[in-house]
Length: 135
Ligand code: MN
Image (cartoon, rainbow, N blue to C red; front, side):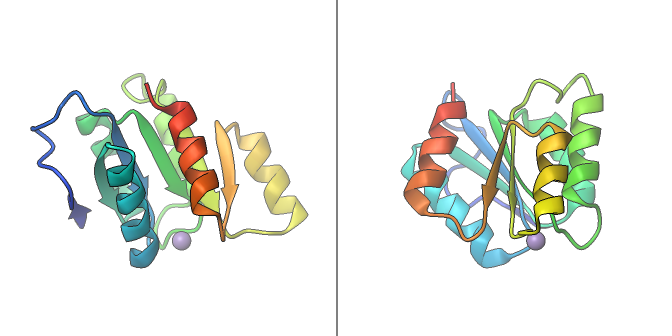
């Protein structure tokens, strides 16, 4: 498992919102960790979809940022698993994807994600969207 905890020990600052990102591109994961830090949030990153549900259950993040194209599970499968589990169903999930075809967009919207952000995104816009979902 590649769990990335760059900013704070998760046990500390437990009052800060926790952002959990699932993303296989390390540069993007790092970028999201910087955004989280900038927004005064804690951060957990994971590059394998198969670990997402377990980590979400364990850490109970305030918000999940979910890449759609991952090497193992798809973001759709992960989202369904999160929604099916009563321990994670309440957590808002923002899909982040480079999928650009109209059909892909329709599929993402139909899946019921709380929000959908296209890559490449503008940092300020992503920050604003994240902020709107934080407690
Ligand atoms: Mn990806």
